[in-house]
Amino acid sequence: MTRCRHGVKRFTVSLLASFIVSAGCGADSGSSHRDDRIAGTVPSRALDQEFALFRRPRTAVDVVPKSILPPSVARQIGLDLRTSRLARRYDGNPVYVVRSDRLICTYSRSNEVGNCWPTRTVAQGLASATSICGLGTKPGKIATYGLVPDGVTSVTVRRRDGSDTTVGVRDNMYVAPGSVHPPLPLHIILHQGGRRIVRPTGIPPDVARRGCTRSLLGRDRHP
Image 1 (cartoon, rainbow, N blue to C red):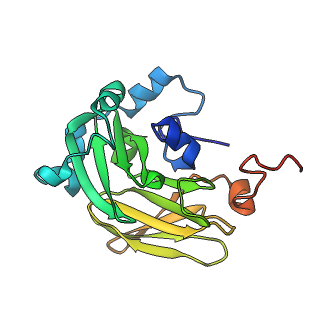
Image 2: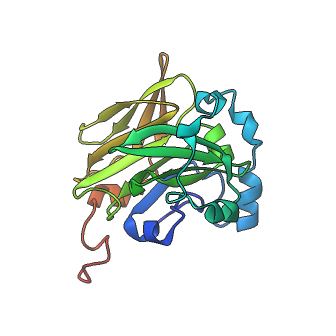
């Protein structure tokens, strides 16, 4: 299955916990890791103009607990812990956003909403991801989430069967839980003023059609 290089969770336990697909990778899947870094580099401060989350003063509630993001891990991937912000809560758990000139990442005890995108992807309004088919989500559920610029007030997750879900945006972040029942969503709609901006969820069409089958999870050897 297709995955963005930076559209996967950081910790081994998280990789085992859920299958994540991301939209707006910002680089061809065949690019080298070095090329991905170059393509995703944007001065972190350049996002301040379009993301109120990054403009507001940082307070004690914005500090990421070491148990969620150890400083050694942050240093390893180049994240600046001084940039962390509490974006929202999901399922009772805080969701933090931490950034660098290369990456923007979300961290939470709710594994299904933890992800990294190239900074350029976030700047282009393409940062979305969906956690499906894994232990990171509640049984029978998926989670579509992302970071959106100022002015986007709500996001609709569209399904071909018409069972759409619309959620509000808080501090430039949205989280839309949904059912694991297929068809899984292929698109989201950003509502910005009177505009409707369509973005992909990143879920491959064949996976969207089949849903989270046992064969998809690798538990069924039969065709």
